[in-house]
Amino acid sequence: MKKKLSLKVLLLGVLVVFVGIILAESLIIKVKTTSLKKEPVFYSDTVAVLNNGEQVEKIGEQQGWYKVRTQKGQEGWLHSSAVQEKKFFLFAMNKQVKSQASAEEVALAGKGFNKQVEEKYKANNPSLSFVVVDRMLKLKVTPRQLKSFLEKGKLGEFGGGQ
Amino acid sequence: MRAGKYLKWVICFTVAALFFAGCAAVQEKLGSLKITKSDADAIVKTTKALRKSFSEITEEEEYYIGRAVAALILSKYKVYQNSKLTAYVNQVGNAVTVYSDRPETFAGYHFLILDSSEVNALAAPGGFVFVTKGLLKRCKNEEMLGCILAHEVGHVSAKHGLQSIKKSRLIDAFKVIGQEVGKKYGPQELAQLTEVFENVLGDIAEKLIERGYDRKYEYEADRLGIRFAAKTGYAPGGLLDFLKTMSDEAGEGSDKGWYKTHPAPQDRLKRAEKELGKLNTIPSIQKVRTTRFNQATRTLK
Image (cartoon, rainbow over all chains, first blue to last red; front, top):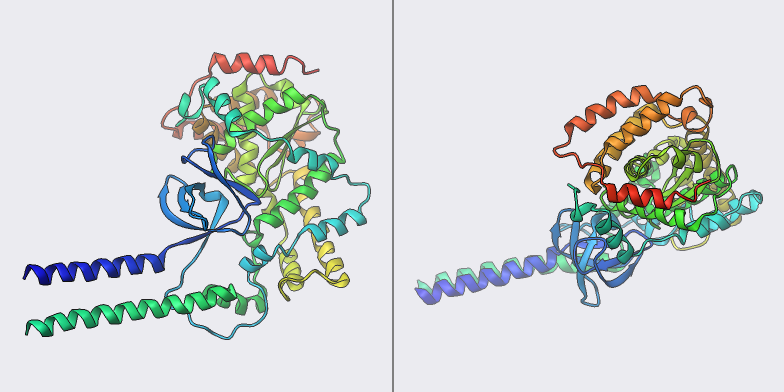
């Protein structure tokens, strides 16, 4: 009796793990680059830098943050605003599809309004300068600077933040 | 009997395992094609018009739209050269973004000071945020600046710029885009798409720079700004203090910049006060922040 029960438990266990693997949720990085964080806060140390289009596996969730595993096996936290969910369809069928692009593919292929369109727009509007825009993009606040700023100003977790 | 029961369990398990393995195999096959069932459905819809709303604009496209809108803003205003103050404004801005609904955009949030005595703040899609020197001079403490930047982050977070784009533009764009994937545009396609791009920028610039966003978006940005500021730890009353300052000054250059593009401060004040009442806890002004604000803005001329 005991042996039969343990066999059932074992079989069920294997099935649960199996389904778990299949249903594991994939996330795609939708921003240019993002930092995989050690802890679910922006000023935490960076475990790895991930690029647009890279896929990661979601293994946990906490207040707007996803715990993920990268394809290289690194684990850490990503904010939900940096990723989009790649849905798994259990009953997906291999239908014949036309060669047009879906919104997701457009994003992955970098089509739509892209660098090529910007170059053409620049050529049409030579008086517009993107030099300052590029300089503006270099204005960054490092995680360490952010932490120090929040800490000294008694902000966020260091003060009156909700 | 016992053997039968045992066999039943093994069969059940095997069937289930084979079922899921089959699904996985199908998914893997589709995965290698980079097409899922949803993609297939979306592709079928594409022939009609996939991009019906602004929400179909990708993060990367929003970034390119934002870059061009920023370039348009910078063609009207000069940049105020003060690296220390610019760094401080970026720190206040980034503090607010991390407690907002949308901390990450395609290329992040960046804040720049415009060399103008006019009072104005502008947020281009994707997180290019501008404040004028005139506006900074009206701020008395970090709370006021934090609340104004939180309002601007609210515009980016709720994608108010993208919502200003006429729907017809998106359909025009997708007629060009919805062809083959993975190749560069030919000259004709590129010319068509660039024309759509210019029209998109025109839609946004008209609202953002010339006429101002719809009132409902300004009120929404106030609501979001108050929430983001309070979550960061800033006294959200900073927004009310700023609006009171602007209300008192109404009349002086009230046909320009901020006055031209924003609803009357009195109208916003009433709504903002209501929002404040909804917060569970209201952070208070901290002397340490006012001190560093005074230090940072000391060089402001």
